[in-house]
Amino acid sequence: MEANEYDLVVIGSGPAGQKGAICAAKFRKKVAIIDRKMTIGGVCVHTGTIPSKTLREAVLYLSGFRQRTFYGRGYVLKDRIAMSDLVFRAQAVMAREIEVIKAQLRRNSVTTLEGDASFLDPHTIEVKSDNGSQLLRGHHILIACGTRPAHSTDIPIDGKRIFDSDQVHTLEEVPRDLVVVGAGIIGLEYASMFAALGVKVTLLDQRPILLDFVDREIIESLGFQLRQLGTVFRLGEKVVSIGFEEERDRVFAKLESGKNVHGQGLLYTIGRQANSDQLNIAIAGVEPDARGKISVNEHFQTAVPHIYAAGDVIGFPALASTSMEQGRLASCHMFGKPGVMPPNLIPYGIYTIPEISMVGLTEEQLTRDKIPYEVGLARYAELAKGQMLGDEQGLLKLIFDPVSLKLLGVHVIGDRAAEIVHIGQVVLTVGGTIEYFRDTVFNYPTLAEAYKVAALDGLNKL
Image (tube, rainbow, N blue to C red; front, top):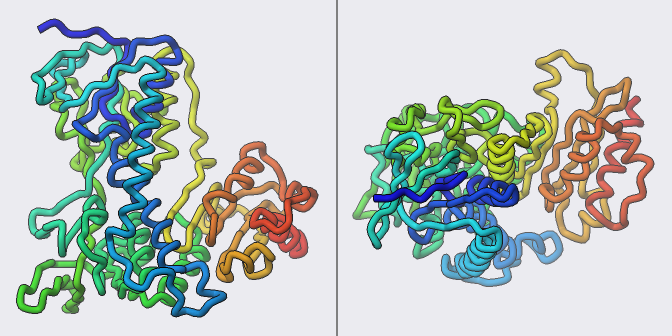
């Protein structure tokens, strides 16, 4: 069988694969992108970022969550919210997003192939589909095959009562009470969405603290707000078994401490498994770890120099935003235009309810490294816009050098946190001081104005 020759063959059409393919096409290279049937856009579009964030918007809208400050805790927009109400919005957004991606690839003359990819040698990939198989030969290869929820053989996941994050949007009904095993980003995001719907949520994790890379004050605020919604935290607790009681129609999780936690449903979110195990990757000379993650250098090259990897398959931070940039930078390096990603200036958006976003250093990192700092705070309750939006718990925190006044970190919890963090990101990137916020005129009323309030608060402490 004759192999079609390409400058770049990309495996996976999620954020990393798309941006890597399009960047190479802009360099006038011949590019092919492979993905399994009906999965263009990858996990991001089908089961991860897009559906979960759209589900969150649907929850906020239908539950009337943001309006409760004004109309009372019992206010809801719709009395009985069905899973179909929540998923309806996600399906519309996903369909449009898939069309946008297809059009983008088509416009840039990227060949799109549907099927399962498998290495035959370091340069040759076989693509098997319903219509037979074909061979591609890539001068360069980018592995951007993404991840799937990690499963354990002793967890009886059925997609109905015991389910993973990929299966949330296929549920038939909203459970009355929910056990969430795993309080990482995904577990916390879904736990907070269900809590906002009035579901009684119990969150289990064997780690003693939540999201250890996030500023503690922000995490304490998240914990407080989730508890206000009735969420129960069981941290530092190891789950020894999970099962289903037919006669009571209940799921249970047995803990090492002897406790039993019950619910109508159980969401299992213990990490993710990379899809590299489906590519016959060893024959190409690339060795992933036990969870399928692939090691790369700062240019996203694997141990085999012409094979690159980007996105969730290379591990932390595994964000759609960073994956896009990794894919682009991998292509830039392949074709002689290398660039680097600034490691400490990547913003994180955590789409819990309330939203969290951060960029730069935390108080904990600075304390550990014995670097002096000062803090300026702005509470949404002090902002006219915060009052209008009904968010009285929001908080923006600036961390800065007390001598040079240089900005060191920005941490936000509250409505639209992931939008306004970018103002701080720009000042951090250019090495600016918090005097910028003091001297800048911000639109009024806005949440962006929190920067001025926080800067004045910090300067007053000096």
